[in-house]
Image 1 (spheres, one colour):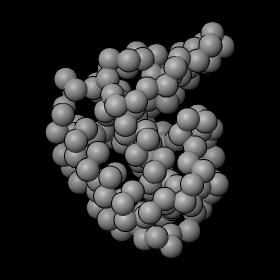
Image 2: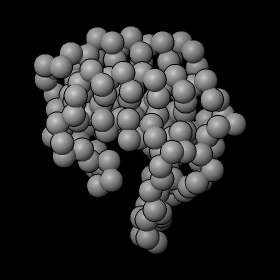
Image 3: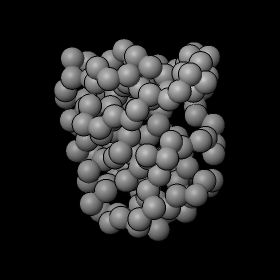
Image 4: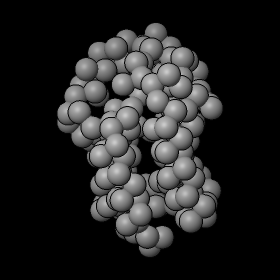
Length: 150
């Protein structure tokens, strides 16, 4: 399965990011390309252990446990998936700055390897293995790159 610990998968994601332009049009969703990059940066911050979201309540935890096998399958994330409020970007950030940050954070995650994955539980899925963090981030980036035709 594709993940950010596989050098070929990382190269592919980085090439797709390089192909993004500030005027890329979305195929679905509410974010523009600049907001999408900032959103991906926020997600990467969580995967790097720089930030974390509070665990959801009992209902969220139960749904997370039930949905985890499907989420970590080979199926891509569905269009218009729900976004946690803490990852919604309301501003209109600088494209070049956000793009450079995404590239740097992907490299930081990859180079840090499994031993540097967060120990905090994911807000929805709970405890994740380093491999699951790497798969989730690849799938998340893939989802948003497909959103903008990259």
